[in-house]
Length: 551
Ligand code: G4P
Image: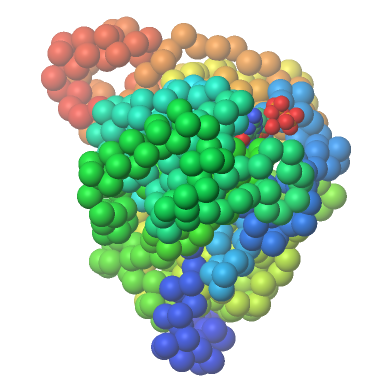
């Protein structure tokens, strides 16, 4: 706590008095949040846009892409996104539908930004795994699914692009069940695919939703004709071979899949499955409707003082992402906080557990579909953006009332290492400033040589593009031209015994000893084999752990 400042007491917490416990529980109960995980090109942007359209948050298709495009036009950094044709930023978007408040956590698709996605998943309660039905599971989906599994997130599977030639639905489902050992529950079932994609059978209502081609892509509501499954006219509408197939498959579904067990969905042990064509608006509304019913509401989070329930009246949350220069005109930096308990209100004071400092949330923001706006009030399950540039680090806990700390956000262990050289020594200070700020944002990890006089930082990243972004931003935001000098290492390990363990172990072969930003020893190896060898030869070194966890 800063000298002269008091910790927050409940009387200083302006959010508390006004809401009755019943109202409080109702507000939390109507909140749902989710992140979409997918391999690039599976249709995440398209699905996001269609969900926002159905949710009434935007009024014409193209807005999400256009929003990205307009940011491209104004921000140098975003220019890089444009050049590379990828999306590397992530945001939280809120929309209200059928009385429920949905937060869609947008995750970047490019594999080099798995790190960002990983952090976003730490803030999500549900995940939607979007798969191109023509391709089946792809590497990025696999990797992200593992993160969802670790966090025991409910996973909803949506097979997209049914209007294009697709793998057999049974094959697609089989892949998920076998590879991920994740039982599935098909909520909808496709009738044909590609040119012969006619629609889906929707199990909850035993209806057939027929997809009418030629509907306007941009408008809400694909042209859909809905018939009861028992309607005799179905036989005349659907070609005989597809109708027969549908009959057989529906029978098989009813026989082979037990009734939907929601508790298993919530524990991440059963995945509801949908078939859709996001581009054609088809299947999106059915997905949204049943997602609202089956998804999990904000739940308890573990902390150092035990489980914190969302209904706990004290405000708490954690920072899962920092994003600089979201508004290029203002050079701002937004910390995204997932609210875990209590209520926040504009102007309330919170403490940051890492620093003990008290901060007034004067301009908390929510990211609506197209704009950011200042929010007055919010509850557990929400994501708020805080514009307090240097107050936060990724993983920080913010709270009012009793001191607590959430466990922080694990990250991927870096696999690429490169010196970053400042080409203009006269700009040393600017260079340090840029590195420190980008480091604080978690754009990359930074290591340093242990040799006196070698001060150039060693950037450590999961993907090459992270280096490029840092280089690009150093130039455009700090005016520093840099040179990268790759190091041929691919494995990094913390020495848990610290410097005494290194000393005790004596001479170490086939590795490089460096230190992290807190001065702790890290060993770099060319490959896993060298690591295993060193551990075999130097028992005194003790435990070596991936440099993935926050300090
Ligand atoms: P991403 O964010 O996951 O990378 O995917 P995005 O939505 O950008 O979609 C990738 C491409 O797939 C886009 O085509 C998009 O139109 C197309 N797509 C998405 N959903 C469907 C679908 O249901 N059916 C079919 N046939 N295509 C779909 P593009 O040519 O790369 O871009 P665009 O010119 O259409 O914007």
